[in-house]
Length: 429
Image (cartoon, rainbow, N blue to C red; front, side, top):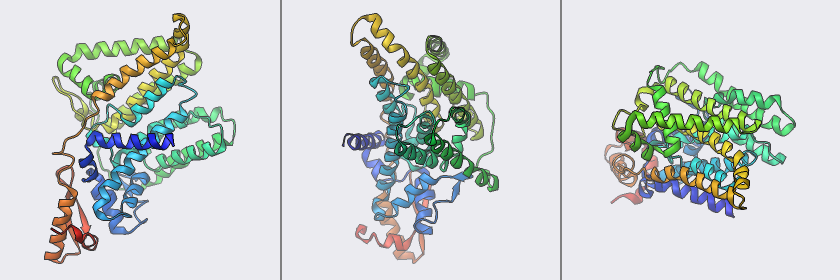
């Protein structure tokens, strides 16, 4: 019951970030014209294995398919709630899989909270079917480190990893970690997790190889390096709003000082940690850097993500989610290694808990200041009920098989079959 309550709370908080009304009564970006539209036009189950942007996107497709099972007027709510549910589930996976590395409950709860309410996630990335694979990627990283105690846990973890691999080729960034896991494989539970990782990752290979349409031409930009410092290091530490405001007012002196402080902190943590903590920190930080740099280059967003002097924004924030959370994970694992020592040194039974709570409070400040992402002029306009009314009138007046329907943000839209619109006749004024 507690898990269910927390999952529902996690979904509700994500809806609050973009605004309840906007989240439930508008379709965002690709959720409408790609996932819902193609599910409606092709019939239930026929669009699941269609590629988008050159690769498989199974989980977003399944969300679009599920939204066709409810009346059309409730489709945006279905998409948003299901998307929030997948992100909440990712947080639960992180809680289970990180237990051996982060024993302090305050630190582990913080990591889960940051997974669900990622402070670097902009408006585009929250409660949207198109971007849930980025949250799933981070949870998959942890599953590759997890040694589940039961076969049932291994099966569920394997299914999660497989679903992630079938939704984004980003799992390839974890190939070195998977190889290391294979070298210390102990049981069939390890085989299940690694086999699912390999199956999901390899399934993307022929899809990408046979796809003749290149969505984006890769572009290298020297802005990628400072963008990593701004969007990932600064964002992971203070959140996009607070960290962005610090950059806007203090500029390079602030950012350079932050980079030095973070580097020194990680070095000290690694030096005084045990071997598990050292290996984890090296893997997490290097994966974070490589994932961001390669993604920014491959998707040609390096210059778009760089904050100019005096400003900050959340554009292309999806590329910062997993890298920032990996950086935070390294810091929390290293901090966890030292908490018991700190508690003993302070000679108070609650010393470790107090230090863990202080670290958690600092990190959650960034999440709190970056919580509100609402912008009804971008997400929420036009209202879904209004465009359905207009679509119904257009279908009745023109006798067409389908009609154009605008969605959020302005400029996006989809084609709705008029027979689907006709079923929403109660919407007629």
